[in-house]
Image (cartoon, rainbow, N blue to C red; front, side, top):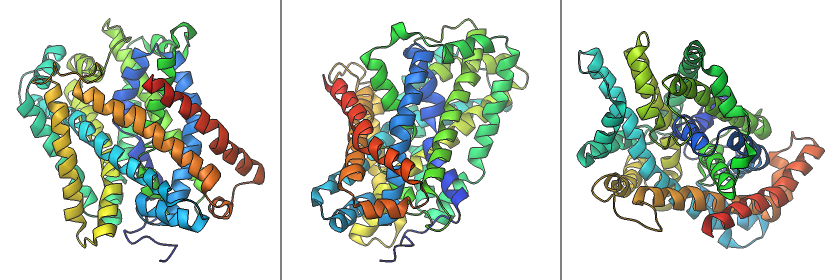
Length: 453
């Protein structure tokens, strides 16, 4: 097989890879999950722990995923099979690819449900533009949505169809077209909301909440949440970055530089989301601590109803939030789709993508029902949706990241590493490898142990 290209297509440029990888990383994890995770874990202390996780664990593993993918040029499962053979190590390392693909399918199942919420809210603002009723009681509006399984199922299905539509078209026609303009538009809108937040008079309090640490609130659960958020937001451990790396050109592209660009952009959007959302929340006298998953669905609509051009802002915000979720969801669907094309010789990506999406959609119905009809069902003291998120996000992603770090640090042939990181100075290469061999595995292992005890 030609080591310079992938059978699935290639990114047309380094910029397209950065946009796509950033699109994968920037999504609900930044704009929906990060603000409420921050509020639920005490603000600034959580942010600092989160940033430490990105620096010491997230970025090194992100680079490892990209280099493994670029060398393999195939789906994660076949990539590990190929690299294990070339490195003369056990073929059982292929289990990492399976863990990543299964985790991606599970995450997509509940991710699509939450993304459906954003489509629903965008539609509510479309109706307002056409003369429909205003959202006067956001809490009641959100509660009514969660209580209606048919409504949730409709938006869940629509979002999954949008995801399939992109993945089925392939790398150039689908993925590149989807991220070329939409991610910059999301960044611009966030900046506009930050500027609006400055006019509320609560930007100082919001910044203090985000950046002033209160170490008294730090617990073992804080580290678990921060590490889980780092993995979730950078799309680590589920082999999406590995798959995107398989389509990355070799010439003129530094893995270190593109990895830093993706991590910086992703983290910046998460912090901007906090600076955009918390001033608005505080301006309405709402305590941001303990905001929970419904924070942006129960708080921001209050501001949109009173601010100038609020309906347009609301439509743009929830529409582009759906777009951010969309660019992330296509990266969750891509690894399994690529594997089916390779394994079963499926000439049509459409059938492969539709099959995986159909499975994930069916699993997503469990999350839909857990919000209403099956709300009393508990597994390990969690509702079904939270349990699936716990298994995929808090267990499988760190486990996948741990194994990727061990594989890259100890099992992968050093010649392959040096070839892929040829532009990295020796001292940085040694530091990166030490992080992969010792620091990242140790920290991830602590999180894993904390998650199960």
